[in-house]
Length: 367
Image (tube, rainbow, N blue to C red; front, side):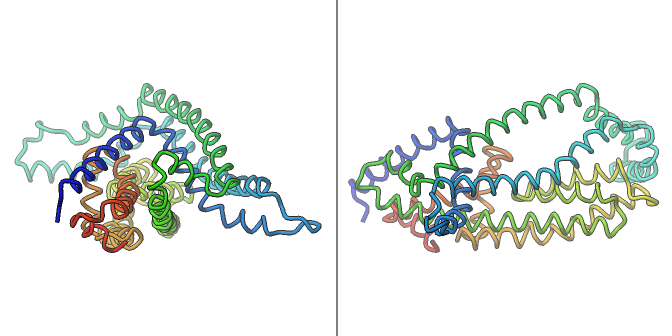
């Protein structure tokens, strides 16, 4: 039965949760650094343990040195990936800066004319009421104008500076998480009374397992999608640089549920319009891109992804879908990106401390 003490306990828990969530939002950048460092520490801990067990002239390797070597290995992998894909991005920026608009419009004149005729017939519009070609020219010109390119360069410079700060911060925090086992748990439990430490530790153990499975699945899925899209585009005759760029965009945007692949698809179509497959028309190139992405992503977005997410975080697919929609409406793309990890943390802690409520038991019965 629900008693006054239970209600007061729930209200107190809700108040504490609200304060914690506000603090997380206010210090979101620092929280992201800590969480990324915690994930990297989970990934690198097996290597640290293996290095510590090594014998060098009868001595064990110091844990600090093992942590440092593991951190270096992590960033070597990250730097290798950047070295492979960053030039593709800058190549596209240069191509956009030197774009020949008249040539692009000439290539898409025929499909635009057919689309214009279709729209006029569908909506019974006079030919002078709306010009699709003028709308496209205005949109592309706005996206690729000198001011837009200057803003893009400024954004890249700002992003580079922010990235340097983020890399240093995450590296520093990750090193100590790897060196001092249990430091992350100690940081979390220090903010709560000692009587809650056992429950918080159990919840953190469960969160670590679920999120590790989730991130591992997302990473594997994105890498496979990148390779699949790149090989498919190459098989249709697209230049390797363009095919690799489209694969990269789709793989990176795949981490954002539902909306990410749509954004990646729009960018991919734009790449096809600017640089069509050699010997093929723009319409054929766009058809190849759209058809390939629909085949590769259609089933994945609406069937495989909800199932994958639900199995790895132990939640119902409809539950996951609604959580993503709510988070997207509240915080846009960032909300959709963080929806599943945040919901997983909330479910685990709710099960640990609020299991007396029926709704909580129903939402956490699979954990």
